[in-house]
Image: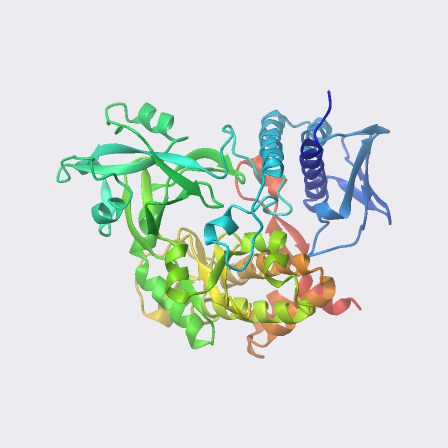
Length: 507
């Protein structure tokens, strides 16, 4: 049987990602030579040979892109990531069969994305076109396109409307008014006694199985998924988008939403103003996407968040607003004809750090600013960076004593982290994930990391010993352990090279 080019590409991607994770997460012993890496395990006498294009450290890790995709065990080729993971499972005496199924799901989805025809991107492309342009996603996660057990459409999805007794629902904001923007006018229910809640089409069997007596209104409403898949935009309105629970494993976690998470964004509105003001006070520009309203039940399977749309921010600012996760694949669509990428990177880093560092320095609060949660604002004429947008108000790392002391705001903002953990969070997400992806996209390597360090050093006071130690002096930093995370079923970290330290040691 002939294997398509797209299938071979998807198999190659999964193979290289699993190999890189095995090495980076120290799950195997890796003997690195100039052209290959030999993998072994103390519980096995066999070995695996991974051929390399470049076996050097890049962004603190071996990247999948550095591997040729030629992987053999005792001379026998290994065809894909699931086969390599299965072999590791036999070495480590672990049952990885479910993880292999989920990896095959991700690989099949990636194959479908490779086959999808696309319209070329440009500075005037819509925010949603940028959202849906992402193919490779997180460059090191083998499950980056996993939607297990479903096979989702990455470009279109419908919602259904269920009617829930109001006594069983907690709402915040002007929920009924906002939800009416997507509810057909012909829908008639007693709003004093009932609440309409949208449900993703893939979630509907889960909801009707748990809530057997609630009615589902006839018909469905078409939407377009953002990069998170459980957040949909609608042609009916450019003002809002809706985030809903989705009992599907995406990026290592089932994407249900707990009731307290649904309410968090609206409840912490005073916090978001403080974070925006902190950025402004230090010369940055940060817009936090507001959560206008929400509805929660007692179940993590049913509820929704009505969020300000990115299109409304585009209308207000006039800028191009681009999700940063798309930049690693499509940066040339904005800056491809600019000869001096180092100048673009310096501008990007300066704005990025001035947007997300002030809340850390002033208040001990780090937003969950990974590339899918942050969007860059770009001037449509000059193509210079003007600022950043942040969304997803569910997670943050905060040192509560410092936050309360600096803001005089006495409210529950979640569990307290140490200041060291807060600074490590920003080093991992803002510096190595968000900045590192642009450095890689521009092919600037060590030169790019020196630029990032120079721009970050401008913001850190000379006497701020903690920040300087974590950002510049420590040779390593915490990083996501993708394979270990999936085997353990919870977030796990590993240790990788801190490129802000390493770049100064490299000529």
